[in-house]
Image (cartoon, rainbow, N blue to C red):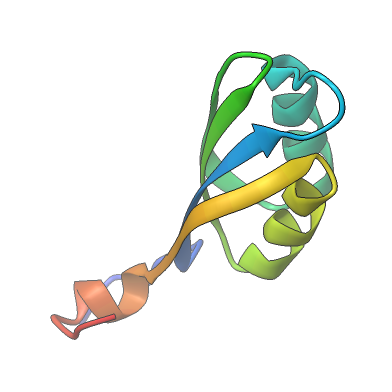
Length: 88
C-alpha cells in the first residue's frame, strides 16, 4: 500500500521587491502562522526571496506572496503524483 503524503504540493517561487524591502523572517513567520504545511524555506535578502513550502493549499501561499512584490519562477509540483510515478 502506498504511503499517503500529508502535504501534497511542493510550492516554489521567487518574490522580487517592488516598493518596500522584503524581510525573510517576517515572511517565514507569516507563512508558518497562517498556512498549514511543512519544509518551509524562505531565504534571500531585502530585494529577492526564494520560497519553498509543502502545503495542500498552494494558491493561498501564492496569493500572500503576491502582496509582497512581483512573484515569478512559480513551480507547484504534485508530490502525490510523483510518488505514484506519474508526471506533473
